[in-house]
Amino acid sequence: MFPKILIANRGEIAVRVIRSCKEMGISTVAVFSEADRDALHVSLADESVCIGAAPASQSYLSMPSVLSAAIVTGAQAIHPGYGLLSENARFAELCERCKIKFIGPTADVIRRMGDKDEAKRTMRAAGVPVVPGCDLVKSVEQLKEEGARIGYPLLIKARSGGGGRGIRRVDAPEELENAFFSARAEAESAFGDGAVYMEKLLENVKHIEVQLLCDAHGNVVVLGERECSMQRLHQKLIEESPSPAVDASLRAEMFEAAYRAAKAVNYEGVGTVEFLLTQDKKFYFMEMNTRLQVEHPVTEMVTGIDLVKWQIRVAAGLELSFAQKDVNLSGHAIECRINAENPAENFRPCAGKVKLLHVPGGPWVRFDTALYQDYVIPPFYDSMIAKLIVHAPTRAEAIRKMQAALCEMVIEGVEHTGFMQSDLIAERGFQEGSYTTEYLNGR
Image 1 (cartoon, helix red, strand yellow):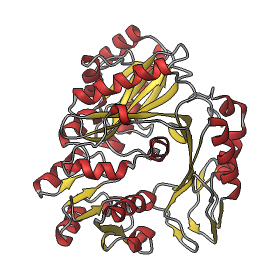
Image 2: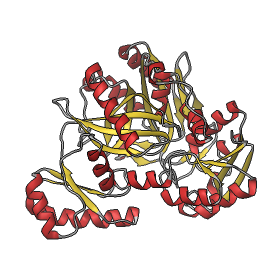
Image 3: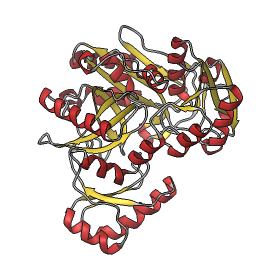
């Protein structure tokens, strides 16, 4: 096991990783920017190193700075959390060169799955259902030919990156060329890679993801699915497990497809295979996330398995101590992402001082955050400030528990999305579980 781990992240996920490390008896190193000197993860870690100025590009995304901090402090491994450097193949390679263990899959797997075009080809070869589409588009002539073959509406999608950037919807042939150049320009600016491909647009679909845990000894276990269809502009707002749209037969098919996906790339660590589920119960591979997901707590709630601890154990070369037959999915879990944004003003980000904080409590209520009273939320980073997670024996009970927890949660001094989440959960579409990724379109 690693005596010391550096956490190359900030906010609630850095606090989350430090917590598991403490329970495992592992020393921790926090890295922080000048804007995060007073951040909670800095005070919780055993050691801390300032790695640069407030902008992430000058601190958390600076590979030389992060690696130098690991070398200076004698950390044997780096946990990247999610976002930032967590899916950066180059960073994983540099960790290996510096003889520091990257807690995640190999650089080759990150690169293959991060290239969405190659990922689709790999999944197709493995027998995993893939959305009808085409490979990389390299000319206007090819663009028009493939568009006519695929049919409209369709999506032009960036090969690299995520978060909804580099994606354009095309409803008719006359929109194709402008959308193509617009998507390429945005992808080049956001990811340094302007390559795009096209696929058929599947409308009114569910976004279902399957959690995997794999070790270096060839063992793969599937840890249930998560329903992630409540989204705004491709950003998830509420997640739950299990999905109300997936029955036992469909679940078995999706689990088998996710298992084949992991085996196809010799996956190691925690990973997530994301599917689109149509109204007629057909599912298609969308992408594979080669990292810990923001919504991992709902899986932990229904399985009782600490994913961060197992990430660390697997990275240290340990074999899984349980098999698929030992995984029991119990009850229902829901997570609400709490963002420092004002929904009444087009979700304007709201930095500032937290004047009053009251954390919801009670059995099976979890609040993952880096907030504390009088903490000043900096304006430089992602707006998510907390995750509220609940678990109950049934979905109906979990919904009521979440409504109670949201009512109890108090965050004063900054605008946040908690009230909006409470309203969404009370709506008929959520109560029935019929909502799709287009549920919030136009809001």
